[in-house]
Amino acid sequence: MTWARASAALARAQVIGLLQESSSELSAANGLVLQLVLAEQQRAAAAAAAAAAAILNTAAAPPITLPVGTPSQVVAAIAAARTRLGAPYVWGATGPGAFDCSGLTQWSYAQAGLAIPRVAAEQWNIGPHPTLTELQPGDLLFWATDVNDPSTIHHVALYIGEGYMIEAPHSGAVVHITPVYLDGYIGATRPVLTSG
Image (cartoon, rainbow, N blue to C red; front, side, top):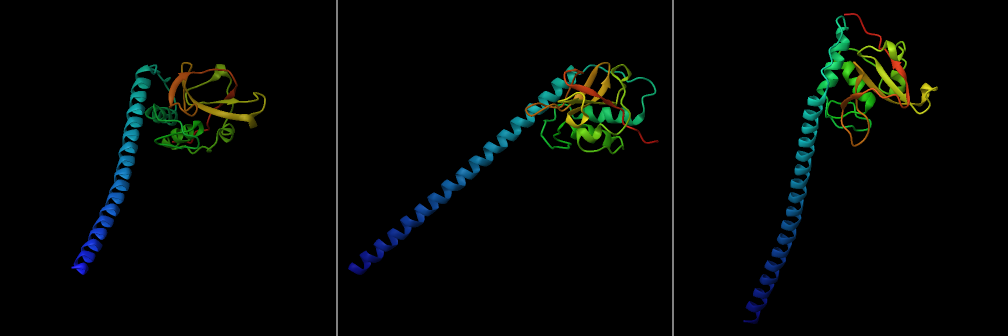
């Protein structure tokens, strides 16, 4: 009888141990499922916010008419940039889902078949420098910490005409259309287009 009781107690202890182990594993699995659900909810909320921002930005975007004779590569680059309205700014991002300032200009021109350098300071050197009164759609606009020193360039945007530009401005913002502003403006570059 003692042996039977001892065997029963041992079996009971093993069952309790297995239940506790299973309970711990189930608790860990529930925690993982909860993390996955929360991450998916956050992703869905971010996607919904980006879509809403894109819709609002597109609706608010002025109807810019490009001049007759605008080069096809410029038309294509501006059209590509407009498709990214509402995409989030992420430092170092080159698209197509997120961009930093020079990533947006580089990606937009790449869609038009023109390869330009990756960073804003290098993009400054890809063509002639028109004055403010000479700006044309497709020109790249630049801002610097020292407006007399191109090596301090820190921001670039794509001019779309009629005083407006498309930019990926900073963390926490999205690609948007905005009037050209001159605080810190150093100048513009007109990319040298390829034939065709």
